[in-house]
Amino acid sequence: LRSIPADRLRDRVLFTLLATTGLRIGEALALHVEDVDLTRNDERLSVLGKGGRRRTVLLDDPELVRLLRRYLRQTGYQRGPLFRAERGQALTALRYQSVQARFSQYAATADLAASLHDLRHGHAQALVNDGISLATIRKRLGHANINTTLRYAEQAEVVADAELRGRQRLRRS
Image (tube, rainbow, N blue to C red; front, side, top):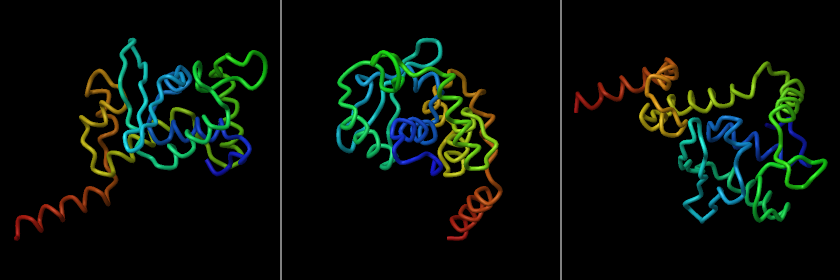
């Protein structure tokens, strides 16, 4: 994210959104301004997921909320697609191919071999390592079935060790 130039606010908001919420790229690109609720201390998105299922995604990253507020203030967008193409008609939603090309450029600048979907996987793995339940992760990611979420169940060894040590301390007291 640090490789995104400061004057590329749209890109910074989009990629921060993907990294801190675990949204699928298609879900993020389908967002409209009307899907964003920036009510203080209850910021959230209404996301249209796979299978046409709508879910609410809490915006729990203060930096993302700050960026979103700044982005909406700067663009003046009141309705329509949240992420728009820079050229052509103002109401044209940003296309996946354009996002993929930008992400590839930023990843190359940062000397990373990563895909857009890796942002989703990274978010899920961070939640697992923070001790968030698989049921909550399933809801966050919009998985219809918990079996899909199980691929993220592998905790980092240090996290598992800390959890077991905490259990030992509780048993001794």
